[in-house]
Image 1 (cartoon, rainbow, N blue to C red):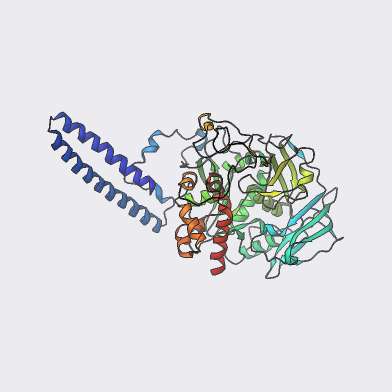
Image 2: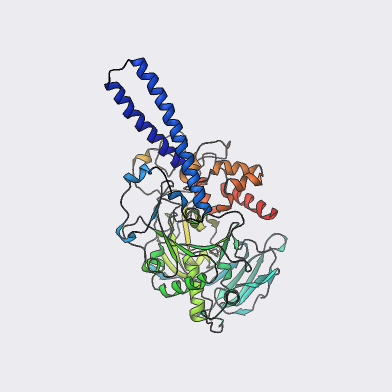
Length: 542
């Protein structure tokens, strides 16, 4: 809608200038010229409004007809497209979705492409990572018991088919509980050499969808599939409308997935074949279109999938943004999402009949004395992963700096994370920090660093402000490349207006999608927590 208003206003203004110049050349009286100009301007505004409404009706009809990316249908040209750079040669003739909103936070400490084998002794499966899992699942192991990789650790009493399994072999040394005896982590002291629980061979070609689902559950990889809306573990009984996988990560200090996928092309393709049997729709890959080099061949040459190219700043790599611009989630719809390494684990299960929870994890941030990539497994001890690499007084984060979870060296890599970030703690005060211009990361244009171009910042955890009155600023809309008004949505969540929440597009969002808005927020509102409250409320009422 904003693009339509822009086109109509520009068209009316250009035509007005041309008519104004023509009247001026004819030597007309100034008052007559003014009255004619006003009438012409009013006429052109009405004309622009008619065009705007016509375009919107055209797009609505396209959506009702099942046409994908209906926003491409337009009566007037999009003027900004005249000034865009041509797509990269590797894109070919494929359409590219250009995202004009967003913000790239460049931080020092980018992970160096140097992969080493991590020496990790302890691994844990964190039950709180699985949304929808009851706080007290059925634990089937005891302290002191030996397990192989892929052996069940616990399961949902109301959904016994889905198993949550050991990522490595070893001895169960802890079963930790939180409030009201809720299970938090099951910790494994790993063997020096990994042992695997073997499954029988599986013929994918002659098997039904139900048989494939059962095999995925037995293999312990079903929890790797998340379902939107709500971000829960995928439903066993309902096929998704579509499945989406983002093949690049645009978050700060994120791993380069083109590097991560090297040597695992066969497993990735096999995983895509399995996923294509689970949906009545399509498996979609989101590819980056604004880098000098083409994405990895594992992505560009993947078969049996639909590929979509995206060009823009963060959060262009978020799967939620890609879904919005490809096949938006409607009320009652369901979409499954996975990460690239989760797809690899699914492919490995069908190729080698065992649960392989291998992960290449990026270590990045200015608080690391040495950045890079480590080869490990799901749930690795953060203390072991980062040993000898951290400076003092630093914050360790499982995930990225926007939406990751703060952890200590005694914590563990969370189930869906393939990144560990470390930045200095901001437990210091700057005299008149709010009033003195200084170089610091900010999505606002009030600091002089806006004039410095592409530089990297040695940021700390200081928020440079405290929670304050929640005011309308337009900051969220400036960084979220979706046809959603997030500030109005957040107000609807706070007032628990479910109908308005759904109308404002809450079902299309997850915490990672709105994390950049939280970074840009002048009011310092905990937007991710607020969004989750709204999603939980809707889910409880449905």
